[in-house]
Length: 161
Image (tube, rainbow, N blue to C red; front, top):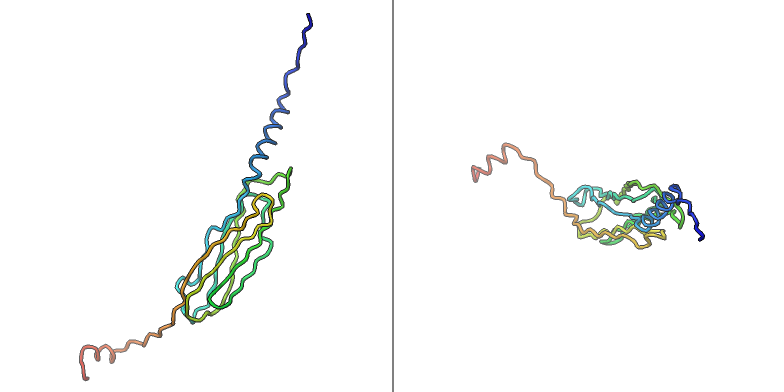
């Protein structure tokens, strides 16, 4: 009778195989997110300079903001963020949150209704689809406030005086 003994599977090979499998499962879950869009001031008038702060984050260390552009025309404002992901098959990225923030100064805008479109374009094998956030806001006419004097207050209570 023939018997063969098999050597036990090395633990290090099992651990390495598990790590590679885990990295393969996590790689497709890359994420890039626009977390908030803030218009400053919150209720602008036609004498206030308007700026927009965009905050977001990436789910791993392979992502970065490459460039961004701010454009305005008519009642439309646009912010285009170009995010780059250097991940490739077989490449491992650190699983850390990478925050980013950008600011666009649009200056004084005429009174009216505005639509702001923030687009985060992705150069990525894992997440090629863009993120888009649309915000509508109004710029109102500035109404000057007349200074309040004692003479004006008395005039309110003493008609004809």
